[in-house]
Length: 296
Image 1 (spheres, one colour):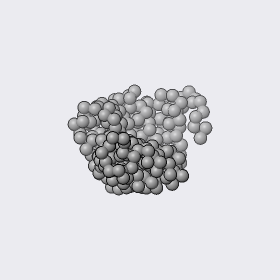
Image 2 (cartoon, rainbow, N blue to C red):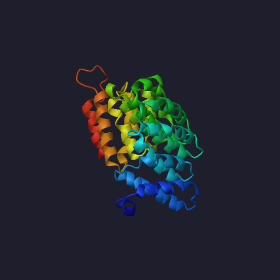
Image 3 (cartoon, rainbow, N blue to C red):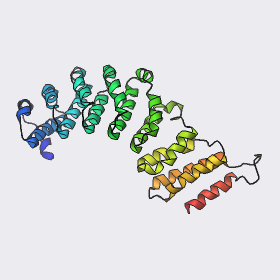
């Protein structure tokens, strides 16, 4: 709404402070939201509203998810420039990480991890670990992305926490969006060694579930295939068969990624001149011809 972004008049921030002080007794939900929107609009315009921090902290005690989101946004925005203020809200965020509403748990965890202050690690580790076992997929996938933020914040503490092993275990999570996030995070964490480590069990598990993934998730899985070398011809053909249905999807990016995966498997398992395999074993050119036929 453009009305929230009009140029502030002198003293209007002080006026907002007075409104926020009556926030708890205000019964009109929409009016409460309008007050918050005004604060966030000023913040977005670059006006320093950090002096409203105490009043905003009191407003966090609400069941209104929209207001909570705006308060969390306010906290994250001023965390780096006002670390002393950010530490004041830590206990509230940790408490909200245990809220009965999974949306609140996820938003609180995301905000806690977004504070990005080294001293926050000790407060973040335990809520993060709990979130990975949460009964709601939104909280789990938020926790997975929180692990990545922790990795960039303090790699030494990250290594001590053994989150890598937990992420590999979570590749078997029943929710495909959680698995997608695990793939992205593992690839980034292990970027120096070429991305996440792959073996037969992981590769076949992901490909058997590929129909469950979103378009983005499908691409994340397909990008792993060219990095995996099948142990033998049978395994290579098994992977090709699992990928075959993806060629019939409407997702052009997935089709291109599947073709790339087919060609990489053909190079890995196809017979080359001088190989001592059976005469019936298909050559690289034979397999690439089959790829062309499948595309048609």
